[in-house]
Length: 510
Image (tube, rainbow, N blue to C red):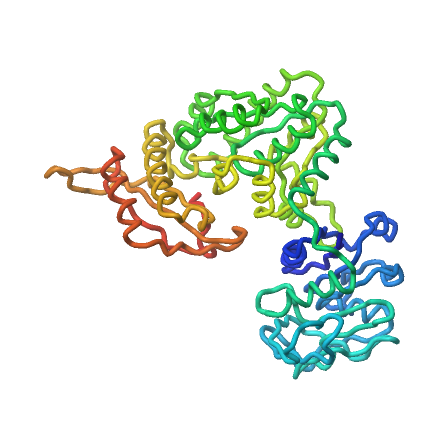
């Protein structure tokens, strides 16, 4: 177990990913964590992240300096190193020459953090305007760049280390080895953390939290809620009730597939609620995307709550909240915003229904959830299902929603996904989907003039959906998709391909 204390770095998730890729468990925590809380977690090591602040600025983030006296190895990165130097008696000032981007780093030793790295000089990624000027007692310089004399430091006796550069980013090629030297040689961690071990620990933790009480879960059919449901089902069996609401905005055969994969294969207790008329009637004549979202959210709350109240003595609500949700909502200075995000999935139901939350995935990243799903035996199609928006096809039918337009989009989307899967691209893409535009165009079919719908195809690559690039799909594949949709889906006579990246565009059109 490694603790990462977050000082506001844009790379804090990357640090966690690198540690977990080395099969060591870690958690990102706020600087407000007390020494007692740190000791209760029993970490083998602590990493202090970077951050945008200057150490000498008013209200710069700080943590209890007592961490350096716990006998636990500490690695400070960028601002984290400067914090360590500052509180232990050194001096940090504005750098004469700031460093952003690539720099050539020269290691002063071939042991400790740099054990097993044959190159004494290596590229690294810098992002700082301040630099250490003098070191605290007991520290030594173990690496420099042309602009930064004190680019890496160590206090071997106390096992305290600092790096001015960022080892967690891909632009520091030897960064992974440096981090692993800290994890394994300095902290004594072992690469034993697996999804199987996580599953066992999560099941035990759910049993301890819930006991013999009842839990409800809003099941969407996505990998997050499906894995959440499966974990809790393993822990408490029939005391979990999943509620799946058919809002009439699902993809083709969505509910039928879920019934087979979850209810039949995994024996989960699922209530399927047919409410499509309720949603579609309320959405009739509505074109504004924000109004669509609000209507769908409100009706979902009403339907979910009505179904949940049929189950007596429920005390817990389960959610498929992931670690990025937690990280993005928690202020690096320990702010109280996590509660707002953790309730977001069901629009505030915990407060309204007075339920306690169960969030077994809240320390996992998306790719780790997929690994967990595979370890639990979840259907491959569910494990690798691309993200699907909460409002469903409502925000992919641009403009007014009608049953007829939804049917056109469903058929076209089914053709698109069939060809994407057949080509082997499905798991290479973050998302691939069709969008029905609110405009028509002239066409010719069978020597007759047509005036039909235009359909846009969207396919993007991404790691985390914060940024995305349009996928360079082969022209032959795009041609097959276009031909099949126009020939097989009545009401479409033109297909276009979206070549916009995010930013400036978004992945979804609405």
